[in-house]
Image (tube, rainbow, N blue to C red; front, side):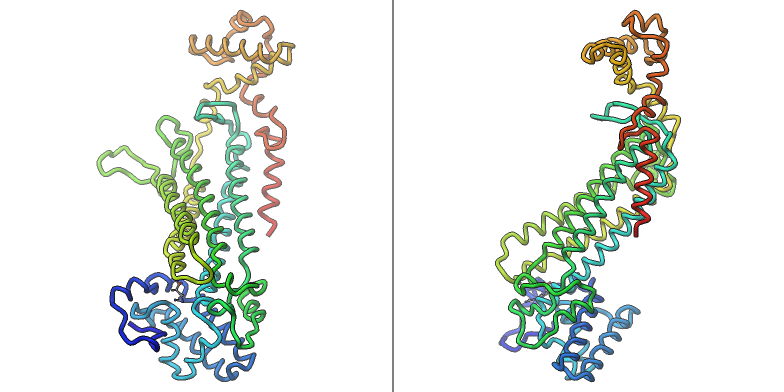
Length: 459
Ligand code: ARG
């Protein structure tokens, strides 16, 4: 048990209390950010003459060495320290002696941890964005390949109207594009540096907060020191955006699971992304999609947990805020892992065009277009709806699709039908005539694909 604050205490901390209070078990995850922040702080202290240049340089060199030693395994982060901040500072003092004791001048662990968490989250925002971009590339590739691949579109999980696979994928493209935009928004709002906020009320040392902000890649310093140490909004925003990503991935997973089922067989998940059963030799299960769907709950949980933790905290720092870490770290790793595994599964998935076409063709997905045919021949829409309803009923009784009926059978239901009905209700016509922007018609789809290409090549 090694502490930075023994001076005013007359007794040792109870062992259970120490363990309950300690965070080193999880905050060591941002040791790099902690050292990076300390280096910026000391560089600034040296420039401001608060430490001599020589002292500053000695500390910086030693911090760099500590970082390298942790990285290559020579220095083990031991849980005899309360948190990562204590570990780094104690190691520095151990190696440098009295000069090391000057590192914490003009700083509190409150602004230090606020900085570390922000730096770590900022990195997660960038990494998540990059993974989303890779996923969008995969989706766009499928869109480009499948502009003519006809499949049924569903509402209520009932076949509704014919669409294309490109169109279906395009919906997910839009969702994950918005998820990227959310990452960008979070970055813009969060990229201000809390270092220099002190414990809560700034400090009397002449710190140059602009300088540390700039050294650490921030737009500038935060403008209220109480808010600086106690703001976790950016983390809540990240968890909220991460929850939305998981919700999108979960919906997509659900579709993959349905499409991969024996009944549908719209897709085949690659062997590398499927698993078998220990008892049923014939099985090939979509476990990855199921796990992604299942892990959504943990990310939602992290969001709810942090919102609840934060709701009762008076200004400024309170120890409750230490609870911002474990679930957030888990959510960050989960969302990144899920995006990249889902991407791998999608990129290797085979689409069964024939099954999709047959499914669209056999399910009266052209009933709306048949009604529209009557409307184009002067029948009011409500009457046309009724006529096609009767037509569908007749088809079900005869076990036939609309275009499998003879003209005589059609005319028995409405004399308005002519030979050109067959062309008007073919799957190809139903799709290609839907040409408003955003619709599945090939020309509209190609336009949207062009926009998507341009968007992905922007950066
Ligand atoms: N481990 C603490 C946390 O995660 C660091 C800040 C401690 N500050 C304090 N005043 N006890 O929040």
